[in-house]
Length: 169
Length: 169
Length: 169
View (cartoon, each protein chain N blue to C red):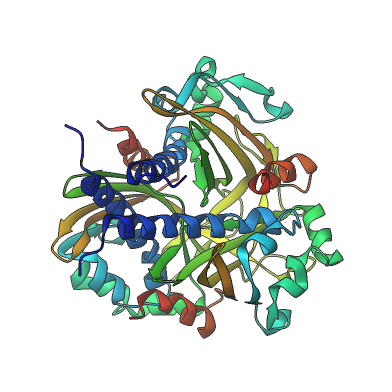
């Protein structure tokens, strides 16, 4: 059955709202703000960075790192989460995205580069590159993240499994 | 003549479908999946990585690298295609995009960086940065890529020519 | 009061137009084209790269660097501005975006990496990573940039202040 204009517009609005949810994560991570957890995550949503970082954790319980002095030390040294263009698919009241994320930090040991009209710096070091899977749920207050799982793109299978979700039926 | 609501919505849906086509390329390239070629490319579409890589090739014939053992060796070592925000313009049943793409690989020779709350790694090496032009065509099954051309952003003219397509009338 | 279908579609069109404004900046910066300044900037718009680069400057007066021989020298050596997924919020006839931007240049001093099926290169150096705030205004000719401010993500407060704009009421 053909969708109504209203339904088509709503699906587009859903998509753009999800783009903004993904785009608002780095500003939260790189400042240690609690805002993204409060605005974007479902109460029982879990964030899974892999066994190296304790496996799946309830995001509201950890407050997105703001209560973690180690995280705030990284913020103070310079920390940049950099999000690529995500793949997003919506199915009624649930949705998922597959995205790439870089984490960069100022390079304090490498050679200085002097680029005309762009200053002299030691530049930045790409510390991590990960494959991310986000699962979203529609709530009365808008779309919320109910799960996020990431794995490093180091050639191992878990990251490739996340990426292949793009092509799942 | 003013566009109807339906026409305006369709153009927006076109735009979002093209975003997803571009966003689904890296998950295919970084896993060696055939899916992107089958889902996203026109049968006669050509991919041109420049003379260093054999010039324009029919993408369906090469199956997007999955039949290439060298490509799969790169995937096994860790390979990340990272897509920036693309510029996209639609004109009826054809469209084009200008985008930036990084290719990153794990750095196996550089110094280790220990970032608080983000682990210790040698990080990633940005192996390539390219300017990409994508040409799309509307088909009964949806938008398909009929051509993609990329050139390295190393200061040479071909990459700049691709970028200037953004401002063509 | 509920928005009309027309109003909802217009807000979506606004969002996509702003995505394209942001996406068309790198192709201009990396070629030295005047096009982005002429097409995307309000006449009195100001671009503020910080005190290291002279503080806020009227973008039309500087023509976006094209009149700056130093900038063109950087273009000739290879220069890539790489834009991440922006956060965008629209409020009637004004809008803002918070985005991340990398500047990369070819690495001429580091070791060569040979990646199967992806050639041998010294790769690229991430010269800068910045937090950007864009302010937009609707004009009869479309959305225009009235201000852009960026600061390096080196751990200092100004960049974090820009990022926190994402969560401002």
